[in-house]
Length: 51
Image 1 (cartoon, rainbow, N blue to C red):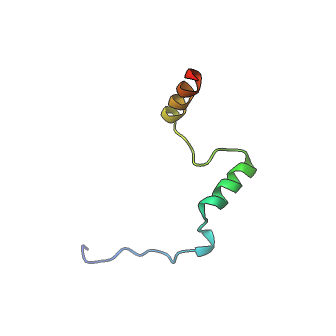
Image 2 (cartoon, rainbow, N blue to C red):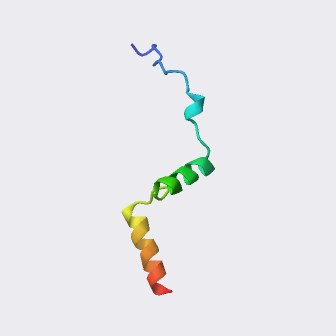
Image 3 (cartoon, one colour):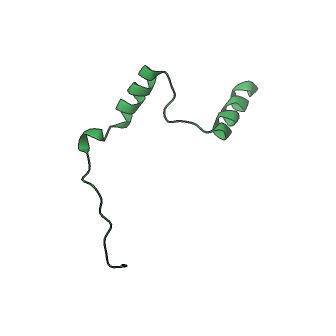
């Protein structure tokens, strides 16, 4: 059991995208990329409110 290697499917290179492509697609779809969690959004809002 411990000597068996887990099987991984072959990588689909056409599914690998560059960050610039992800940013462009996110803008096209109308959402932020990279996604920000609630804590980071709250901190960002606080910084913007101080200015």
